Length: 337
Image (tube, rainbow, N blue to C red; front, side, top):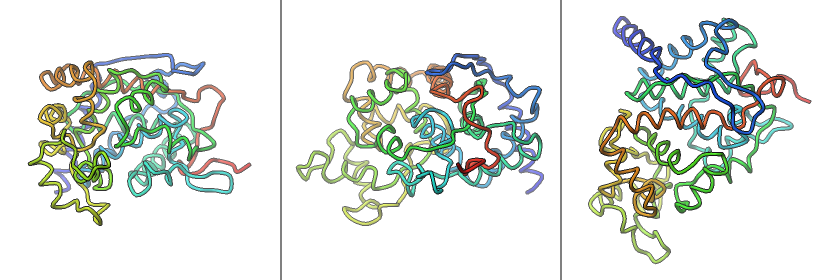
């Protein structure tokens, strides 16, 4: 068993190492540049260490890749990609882990700390927690069958968090299409980024509480969401009752729940998107509908755009240069002021 696991990890690390998309880019809202070779001299084994630990985690918990992708997304949408989501409560910090989008939902924090500990052993106070999140998100995509890309690096870590930002800036499952698009545009992302990045829901789970209203009372009239396939809805009701079962988990993509592919978009076309925020991409906007149809028909087009949009999202307001710090432990700042 151990030998088989080691073979799997070596194979995955080799796959991740092949990154066809090299993007050295100006960070949105920042005066600094991020570039993939940032640690080539200061910590040359950094990416290999992240890849290996992510591969081990996936072998033990197939849910972990989706959780790591989500951490990066929820981090970048709040004050930029600065690892603020990882901070625990302290005398001066109210943790984003307590926000509505993250409470009883965000996971993978212990794995990020494991990666950080390994990196601190290899090259102390060098690799930021924010860059660990970005690398782990890429590796999680590749390990489940998705595209690879070169991750621009050089982010530093925030010394604070924003509970209000986490509550207000992260798109919610029940938001309207226009509200979701507006939240993306605030981050410098556009409609194409919205549709392609939503494709990350090809893996992962959602809780009953996040879509219950679609089953029973979508518009406040006591009727279900008619844009949800009613046979699919009847299946969901068996494990998502009107009350209770809030934390029951459901695959975001019931067809291939652990494989990063384009089945998410095929589900939307047949009105089997689990979340309202997913299905509205097909039902509420003509341009997004055409993109959904394109990605459902052409997985290569989806993969190519997803990689580009992930790089773009990873460039949201990073701390560079002398701003922020390199945390020694990701869940707390180096010094309490």
